[in-house]
Image (cartoon, rainbow, N blue to C red):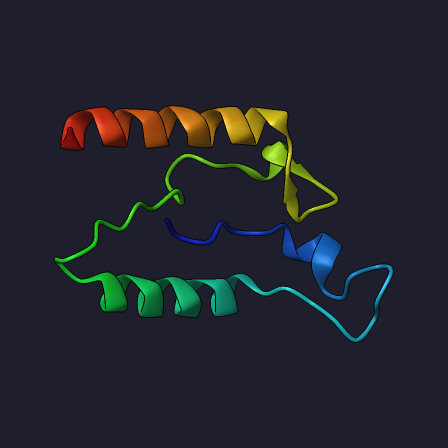
Length: 82
C-alpha cells in the first residue's frame, strides 16, 4: 500500500514542530521506491487517484471519510485478487 499525499500548506512546516515538514515530492519518491521493491512479486495498491485533501485532519492524518474510502478500495482489491 502506497503512502498518501498531504496538504502541504498545512504541514510545511508542522505547526507543533517547526523543524519537521512533509512534502508530496518526497512521498512520491518513497512510493516509487516501495513500488519498485514490490515489483511483480507483491501487489502494490495506490490511492492517489481517489483521495482528496478534504479527507485530511490537520493536512496530514486521514479522517473517517478517508479511512472509509481506503477500506473500500482495499476490500475491492482483495475480492478481485481472491
